Image (spheres, rainbow, N blue to C red):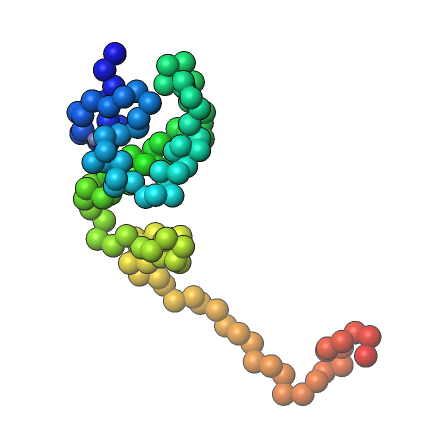
Length: 119
Ligand SMILES: [Zn+2]
């Protein structure tokens, strides 16, 4: 049975144990490469029983290649871990209405009942 590289659009034949051809594998972030191997169980490609963890990591690797090859056309991909990454670039670009909050002015002097109830 022929096994193809899992990168989008790649028809390179690779051994069933391998996720991708060497060209595409080198585009995968080394941290994700390590996760691929740490979630791989010998023979899973024959038994057809990869774990959910492996599938998740495998999809991350495919996504790495997709982005590296310019498949992601977002104007700005925020840095991982930044606020922009967490809420998304589109949310940052959208105009945010000014909050309509009125902060009451502090009283000029202490009133009976203000402050520490034990004082
Ligand atoms: Zn490939």
